[in-house]
Length: 470
Image (tube, rainbow, N blue to C red):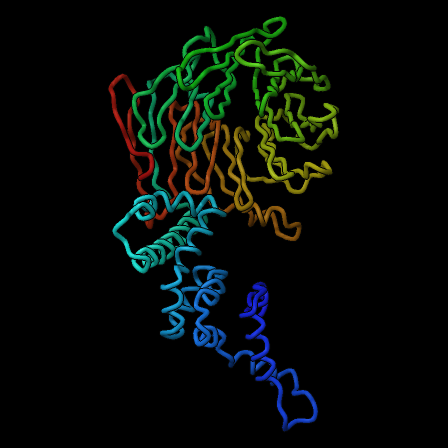
């Protein structure tokens, strides 16, 4: 590894170093070249950092150290005084830390939580002090990531249960880095994620809202009379409204860039062009489902849809043709998720299925729920499913994709914090969000906690605030 790093730098310093290594390996006393074992030992015994220091090339040594990960750099700093001196004087810790937060969203989020902005902008810190701060942050963040991974693996979390007024059903939940949008009846509630304040409302629907999505400052919602409303989240006002043909209920929708996709109660998928705030025009209707559309998901290239007739269909967004019809479920499809060429579907037959989006092959059937699977989300590491009886299960996604792993070992734990059907589940690296027909939204925090705790808050007309990042 060291030699690869050394020869990435093309300059006289590297030529001098390589010549010196040749002199180390050459011997006038031997007629034949030394065996490979001797050469390897010579390379290992040669202290290239000390050599660079002797040549007044500390910056080159620092650049080499900057290629290391934090764990290896920490070990290198304890090797000897000279190495440690180069690492701190050449701002290596700062370089390594900046590289991590630029290439990893997890590191960037945790750096912000740990006060990196204040450290970066502090004018009274010497380069060595800033380097020591960076080293400390590397240690803290690595430990936090490890603790969070362990918490996800064993189901350890801090839980905040937000109880809404009686006889209300939270039918839809959407979150981003700063906001929480939820649907109760014909109202859309907008709350701050960091402080769960008294909500602002998006009012305009006259009947039950069935579908919601938002991105940046645009939110789109649809109700059971076929009305679609477009909202500006900055002003909390509707900027456009329309109704589909025959006033058919729209059960789900997704939008991406300037394309909106809707799925209605008679099995028609509508593809719309959004030219807001002036108009939204229908491009094409996709026909092929024999039952009502129950769920949709969308990527750049693909659209997936589930319906009451037990099938999942995969569509090309470029040609808008049906690529595959996925068969296997025996009852209606309740939920679906598309990501990284994988599709996960949940059905009233109490199973979830993992499909290859490119080939349409079923890769795994997840069995274990005693109620209909009503919500699903996943990433590269884990898959979370929710059921009609309030139970949620966490599955090992990597093991589920391994055909040699037995199905009975895929579920890592079961959660039972909801008392009725789970309607939505969302996850990021540190948190999970779920809602159910028990009038509750639950915020699950898996970050860094060594024990579990539960906090219940009431969401009523009283102005209140609770920090969701506990």
